[in-house]
Length: 273
Image 1 (tube, helix red, strand yellow):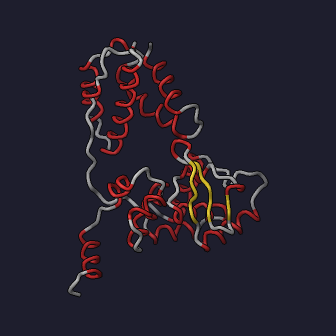
Image 2 (cartoon, one colour):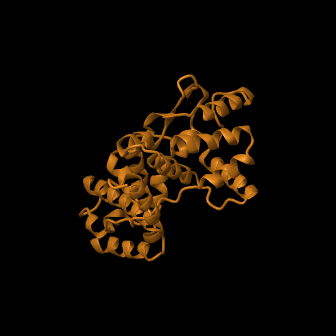
Image 3 (cartoon, helix red, strand yellow):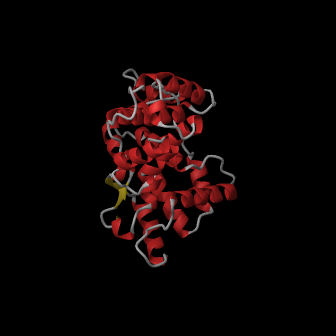
């Protein structure tokens, strides 16, 4: 079986026909194999094939987060190939696990968030408030419908990674922004009428208008997590608010502190203060 065909069958198999960003993400990452090998027959793979691929990919100067993500998908794909007798061995050992550096999440600052709010129209302001206030993934907000919004209960139902649904919760100010927007919006059930690409373009347009440098959607999610912890939320509840699969995921990403933050924590909680 050709590599491109195998990738297509693998994605279809593991995503079970989902139409959200998950299949596209798998395709994007696994196509790095086609970039390196070409569209060859899978039966020609050897252990050294993936040793060479791993060395090539690491040498491209990409971030450790990108390398880790691609390698995780490749390892999953190799196990799938071996399970269907499309390769002579799993070759998983040839694709290393990548340990991520412990670094502070790249969150949008409150000052930059307020600058973007100041130049946003009614819809964009509502979208910004949801990003900042809920910790939702951008794909979940883009796919949200008006019928998913429960303003009286201060919550919104979203479908996120892997098609998993969950409620995210809204402050009163965010509810007010959403209520103003919903009253004035165009007809139809799509809440924001944005694709993931459209959301990114909108954020970039606002950022250029007000001179903000960091504006990617995930920076809002990072800001939500960091500020929620600083305000006293424990990791267990934050994990649920973030829609993480486990508390360990939350701890790995967000229990990272600068020296200044640790000093502030000591001044607040020292038993001898």
